[in-house]
Length: 208
Image (cartoon, rainbow, N blue to C red):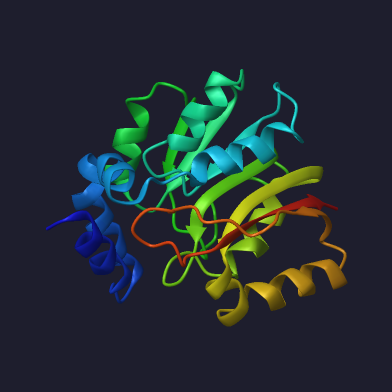
């Protein structure tokens, strides 16, 4: 199966169990496929925004870390207190090989997360909040586990933002005083090769 067909296969999943199994199967080829077929630049864009806002000594959760591309880039910038979670153990096994995370946890976004309140200083996520993946309801738990004053910095695919509840969830969390907006990036193409019509933005919110 070539990379483009594999991505289509991923997006045809029906539930989290199937999604996890398919990512487990893809894990060893994931990075090569994204680079060769799509020139995936999402991690670089998210890391750049994150590094402009978060101190190097922060306790950070890499949300839906996958194979650890964001963690690797953060480690190169001097971040060392990194925890990863992902629904796919296979992806986490690949992330572990990068030796940048202190802890790696198999967890499903949109379900209760096994972290105490206010555990982390910041959370970062790239490519996770897209059609058919982690739902907008994930943010209820994420604001719980980030300490007051901490930051959530993440990308969202714009089709998902407009059509699958992210826009409404972000407004709800702002109206209820759970977080406040800090910045939103211009839209950009994280996969400029192969699928140029896919657009993302990066949001930065401060938890209250």
